[in-house]
Length: 158
Image 1 (cartoon, one colour):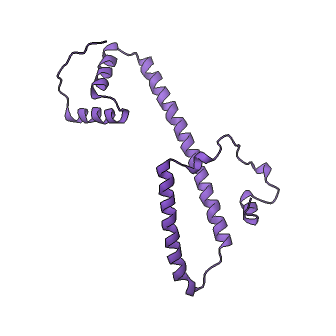
Image 2 (cartoon, rainbow, N blue to C red; image 1 turned 135 degrees about the vertical axis):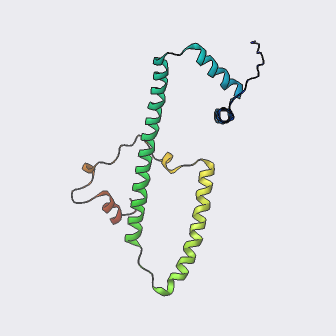
Image 3 (cartoon, helix red, strand yellow; image 1 turned 90 degrees about the vertical axis):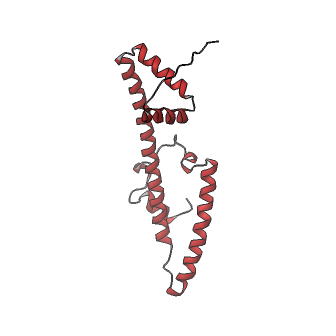
């Protein structure tokens, strides 16, 4: 068992706020953060070690950005396809039915928001349901003269 010696030190208030924030994010004590920082300072970490650590962090961030970019593209295509199909299959309403349709739309939207809130609270995500191993459909897979979107409009049950 290691023994610890208490030491009182003074910090700039802004620096202490940063230490406290890091402590909360990492869920470790402020003492542990200060101890690691002092040990790192005294060990004289070489520039190569720091560069390697920074490189690893940047690689991880790059992979996360790539995943976010892919997710955003999927969501964009999903919304685009939904709107396209909805606009193509929904006839315009007569003036007399528009007020009732707005009321029903508001009711349905409220239900949608409640369902979305429940899914987000449980951690269920649409993008997690998609297989990341499934290759994207290439244009060679779509018959000549048709696009994947147009094909889906002709037969939405696909």
